[in-house]
Image 1 (cartoon, rainbow, N blue to C red):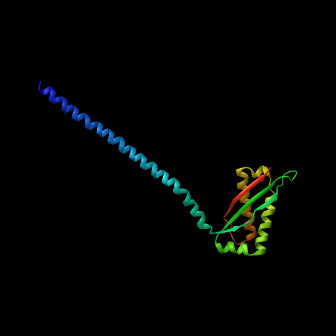
Image 2 (cartoon, rainbow, N blue to C red; image 1 turned 45 degrees about the vertical axis):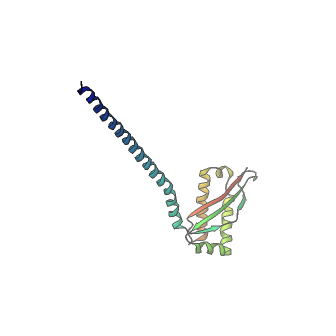
Image 3 (spheres, helix red, strand yellow; image 1 turned 90 degrees about the vertical axis):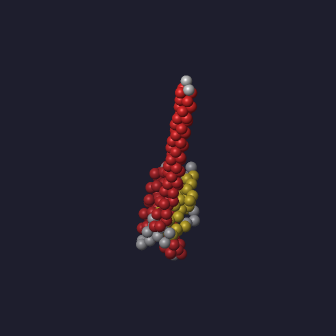
Length: 162
């Protein structure tokens, strides 16, 4: 009989470490998942600024315009567009050259006004229409500026009146 009571405490002692081992295993898995999630979140947050830095490395100058207000090419001519935009150019010196060159700046603004006045409200209210307009502005501005490469177009205000 003395062997039976001695065997019972030994079994209980063996069972407790197994529970601790499973708890440690779950804790370690939780820590690994938490670290992996944190690493993924950090990568996700840092990926966008890296892309922005690549664009910024190409263009350091910005040509600023006063807001454009144009009648759209819709039937009846009752709709208009108000847009404020900026053009990204390679250097700040290029941006200064464009903005300080009175004739060049007026020629560029006039070309953009003509392009904006050819648009319709139906096209401009869609994302695809805005992207097409950006592309057209980029091409028209590059044509007017000649050797100064326009790398991007930024809209800071875009309102289509219905």
